[in-house]
Image (cartoon, rainbow over all chains, first blue to last red; front, side, top):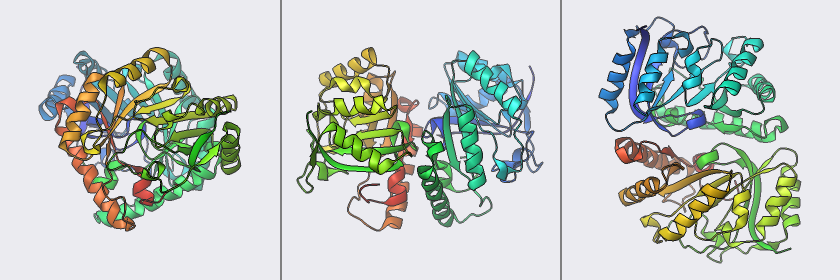
Length: 239
Length: 239
């Protein structure tokens, strides 16, 4: 069994964003990322500030079951970039054998065949404000693989901080018009613990994003969402 | 052409709730309802306080296009209960001819064949707190018709105010386990114009609902959502 570096296993909670927003789920957050987004809200997965546990697939599933008991049947694998870890194949297969659904979020840079087995796949290419550069050829191959060889529910998600990000999102959307597209308010206040201030700040940003999308012909088909968990619980980790 | 009583045509805005939450859409709100839910947030559609315009299908589509210009391609038909109006068949067909998608929300009491033509169908049976009684035979027939004869995306949505409503929602969910199920925070403060107070009140209620769902084995598969438009804009009509 290949081990997987795990930073957090938590839940049950709700998925606060994207294609299955509101879904009751457990989270497995893996360590390590090939990106270093300037505004990453989980930088502890790659900046060395928190140390992952190297866990076997059966240990991961055991911990999920111990913690979630009978009140879950959906597991979200997040990161970092979980696509760094081939060992997740076994986690997914163990969960499937128990009738538990899975979701993943990744930027679409590193392929893993287990991607085809996931129920809810979110590909989240990173816009200019992240400081990262999109490799379009790689992303094309990634999307083609998912569209041609999988029955999973597939979506794209782009986090938006500014106008350039919006233009980028429109480009992504037009490149893969058959894929459901989600735009999400970026959180530029990751350090504050003043939750009521953060709430009004993020709702203002969400309203700005809604207004921009409403005015754009290129974004008629998209869904615009906030992060519900941040509205509820601020920047708290593990919820 | 059969005329349709229309109370509001507004947008583009976002759909604030349910299966296509966050979707850019225009709204057509029809007048009249066979229900009188105690907490109805659109009681003006049936309590006589606002007078509908009787409009022909082409007039409705014309107004949508005049108001939405080129920045929409999704129209949500809401009420009241839009299933009262056979004249909507023509509206839907005109929109489809223009490549515009449609959504509808109805409690599942009155059948219309145009229901099969809608892209995103939300059936929202009303829980005990509404004061309404569910006719299960009718609802069974309704769901069977949609499941057997349509290719639309179908969901159930139940608004939750209390524990009895949650039990009701679990019963609905178990009766139609193959249908995506959304639970939604009820708004019990329809009169207030203090938006910042309402926001914190509704988020508290949302957190209560999330906690309850997380604890319930019967609700492992559901999605729990607030009303985003109310978080953003309070009780304002026409947004």
